[in-house]
Image (cartoon, rainbow, N blue to C red; front, side, top):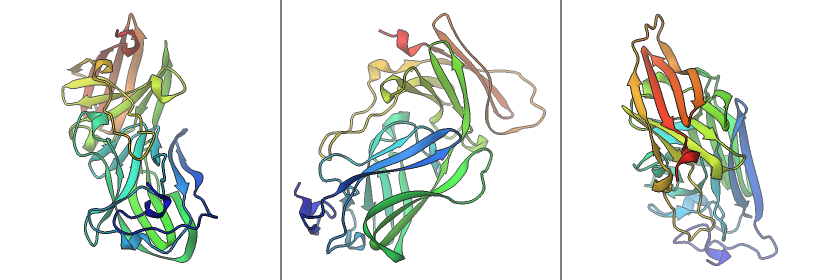
Length: 295
């Protein structure tokens, strides 16, 4: 798509050829993990985000390579999850008053659904930006090991802010990789499919799985991989690499309810991962076959 049309689907966005977009990255660190947004820092032209028509998307400055959202921990938006992985990201105007940040395919990462749509407010900033700038900021004190945060987008005089909760957690080393179990609020543990942990067998997303708990079911799901360009199709995780496990409720007596998910035990032996987790007044045992062993 020509550079002059990358901002608005219905309004040309004129960019001086002498000021090309530059690669940019913003990251937010929490509990020794991070969430990143990678994008093109597009110079401000003659049009604004406020001109975005209802139903139209903006690719966050992308001219060819997709802008991406890359969390290494779960992010909670209302009752909707952005599981760890890589996603193409864009901004959409749903109506005159609602503008949302969308992670394409995020519903596929937990087994289906509409996925993450971060609602936010579109307003004006007192310090106009000369080019697209995206930042994360803390939005209050941590709650149960998790950090309330905002993602802030500035483009010219326009500013958009959306609220989200970045999860903390605990990482342990097991034979073959590292297991990170996250501080999922107990109130969200039984609201559909929940990405409770990640299993990493390497340094990149190719060797990473989310552990998704859904009621009495648990499974390894490969991390989502973002499309490389703005035109490429979003692909769901390879079903051949999804591994189903078993869940059993334990009769463990819990004196004081857990406010968030906590890891009690973790082992990897004889080709099987065993987890014991607790939340509220419940204790669960999850057993999953080693996903690397699946042919």
